[in-house]
Image (cartoon, rainbow, N blue to C red; front, side, top):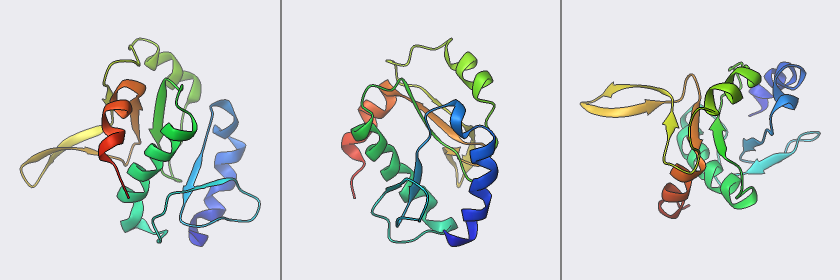
Length: 131
């Protein structure tokens, strides 16, 4: 959203260039390559739909990546540490890493710390994530 565009500059200056990074959004923003998700809102409540639809779009555009991640604009990513940690896992298998816990008696993944999903997991999820 317009209110978060100022927070993109520190991301660009820190971890953005160390790993392949895609920005998701509802509309183009001048000066940034934004992958349009089809969710017509850019606010806190649109994050879940935008994130899952963004994962599908990333999977379509980059089908051979080993790992896909969703990080909010207020997350810092230690790219080297993340790549090192993920190298211990087989990305062809269904893996997802995130903060997790119970909400309304259901086990859920929470995206505050980001969500990392393996190629194998997204391959299984993608057919079920539609607009």
